[in-house]
Amino acid sequence: MDLEFIRDDFKFSARVSALIYNNNQSKILLFNIKGRSYYALPGGKILELEESLNAIKREVKEEIGFNNLEFSFFALSEEFVNDKGYNNHQLNIIYKAIYKDTINTIRFKGLEGDWINFEWVDIDKIEQYNIFPKGIKTVILNRNSSNHLVDNLIIKSDLNE
Image 1: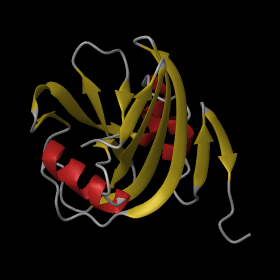
Image 2: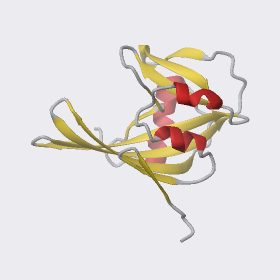
Image 3: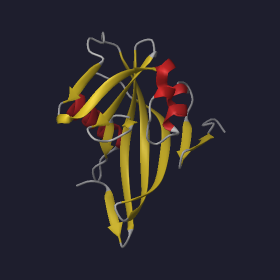
Image 4: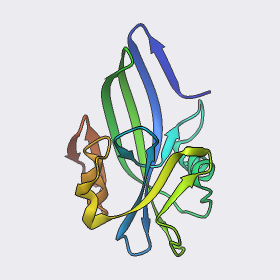
């Protein structure tokens, strides 16, 4: 069961996402759902009592079949969105991974159906893409430091403090 709850017009959910870079970190893997005008990071909802690291491994394997990636924590994102009659508060734990294999196909369909399209995007062209949430672009470009993203505002955090 997904880690989420609904109370009146409020909905809370917890999810995981992956920043999957190619070997030299010049490309990032994004996806687009058919009919939507924006791209997002691969990932999905965390299940009840599931560790977030296990959740991202499961989601990436289910969606694209990658099962040999090593993930490390990278950022925490909080999104506040009014959608479908709910005031949504979503926590998104973002992990980073490097895809070390050769990229043979720039665009491909997800394993869950032809409604989800994945694309390796050049980092230097990231500004040309509509990505949700918008602050994720900053996280993508900031490859080496942790971030706390709140409602499209990036707050840098120093984990050594």
